[in-house]
Every structure is written in C-alpha cells, then in structure tokens.
Image (cartoon, rainbow, N blue to C red; front, side, top):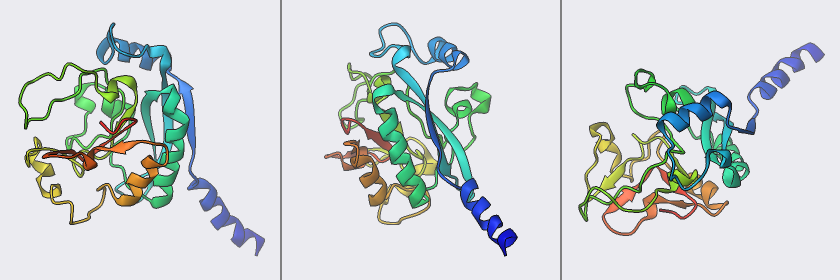
Length: 212
C-alpha cells in the first residue's frame, strides 16, 4: 500500500509550481545589450531580473518559461504566474530562445509571450503616425504580453497578423485567450489590461503596471 501511494505523491511533486528570480546571467545580459537594450533606455540592465516560472502549455503539459522583468515587479509576477498555473491557463511559447534568440529560433506561429524590450510605445493606427515619443512599459520591464495570436492587438478593428483575426471576437472563448480570471490575477498586484482600453484600439495580450 505504501508503494502504491508513493506514485501519485511523486507525480504531485513533479507537477508543483516553481519560480525563481535571479540577476541576468552574463550571456543573457550581453545579448540584451547587443540587440534589445541601448544607452538611453529608461532602466539599466542591472535593474532587470530573470524570472523563471512553471506554466501549462497548449499540449496539456507543464513547461518552464522565462521572462526578463524589472526587479521591482519580479516577485509579485511570480505570484501572478502561480495563479495562472493554478488556473491551468495555457501559454504556448515563453522561452528566452524564442524572445531573444536568433530569428531562426522564432516559432513559425509567432505566438511568443514576451516581456522586456527597450522600445517606444506603439501609437494607435486610429490616430496615425509611426512614433509615440514615449517609452513603452516593456522598456521598463513593467509589461508582459501573453499569447499574442490568441490575444491580438486590434487597431480600429484590424489586426496585423491574419492568424489572429478569428480571435477579435472575444465572445467565443478558446484555448489561450485571456479570461476574467487571468485579468484578476494581474489586477491582484495592481496591473492593468490592454483589453480594457477605451476607444477603438485594444491590446488583448498586454498587461502592465500602468495598464498602458
């Protein structure tokens, strides 16, 4: 009887949520400095952290995902991802090799959940223009994009990626789409959701400290 009980206990332990927060490893730091960070960015590389979390994949299995975030939000975000894990919310791709690796490593479906990148905020196509003149929350390590195919950026009813078109209709819930429970998980640490923006532009993948 004891031997039989040991099997499910081992499985439970194997499937338990895990998270770590660490300084950027030197290879990652060098890669960010060469391609994703530049002098003038609003945060120094020393302020960024590597957040590693357990998450459920689209295959129904547990995977290890990694994000680069600001040190001041790393621990709270670890708690958010614990809630997403408990919800069994699936995340398709969340590996550093996908977000920061060579282009050939980028998945063909483009469904990569991302975090830090030093760039300007994207202006709404409803207003026109190619530059906003202000930093994106991603440039501070204060934003995360989840499953961008299933949770597209929609400007004036249009999406850039045709594969995201079926997900513009948010009334039909499908795997990987942000739910009210996911929004509540981020809201528990004070983060807002781009799906709640007013007007004709929505960013359903986007969560950030300011909501923008």
